[in-house]
Image (cartoon, rainbow, N blue to C red; front, top):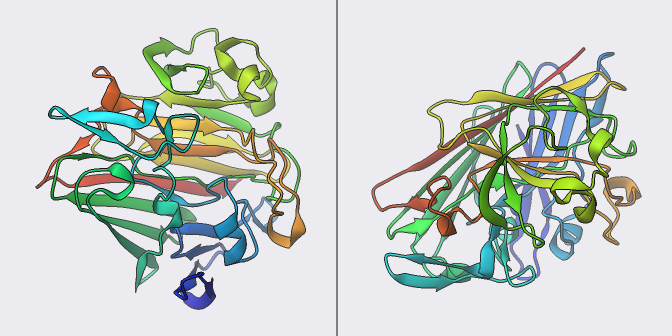
Length: 347
């Protein structure tokens, strides 16, 4: 592992970047600003390395841009309908940063925080304390996220959290993947398989209605691998109205004890294959429908819709407002723990 200064925040604090490497040439670069994945170099079928995640050249661009490129998301990943919820008879109002709803933690979520960093072997350990009332969420919350790069080309992300007051929590990472390389065009020919029998019906604002529906006969059926572009303009399930996929696909009704292989993303051009292992019950599939911001990516490459795909492992969005959804609460004395593994190979 190596460390370098990544930039200086407006208040003078310094953000650092850490690079983890293995013997196969794979490398992962992470900054403690937002716990953001800056670079992910992965070999193709010929052994050539290419950066397969979107992102920016400098800290200033991350500070002034949206999209959550590669960042850690919290306290609540995905959406909270009406930006409010009730715990034990007390109603909490949180940052309503998207059309009256709360998205990815509100106005100043974990993606905008400078995390404490520690190094151990080939792991980067990031820690953040979110105070009681931040963005309206209850409880003093301590979060630890560990990035590990293994010798068999696995990027492991471990999430842990504890609170001193009953709260809600849903942590994830918002990496935008393009296995041909972030500057190689769209991902419509990437083949995706997801082991999900159901999806959460979204309303016009992409907040779950509370209905858990079968993927049978819908464009959300990825149980057999298919090109992402095959049904991306479908009229059903809100796909065309969203400009593509922005849907929560459901594997289970609760967190698993250990990660399970839940999906595969394959790029026929490069041969790169990414397996997704997780103990989380859901994945938010997002095809970068709104990735058209004015700030260019690394090397000046322009942002363009459908040039990446997000596979955000998580709990069900808005689950605190739907008693039939996955449990949303973290109690004092409990430890939240989840693991997601992105395993890379080539064929």
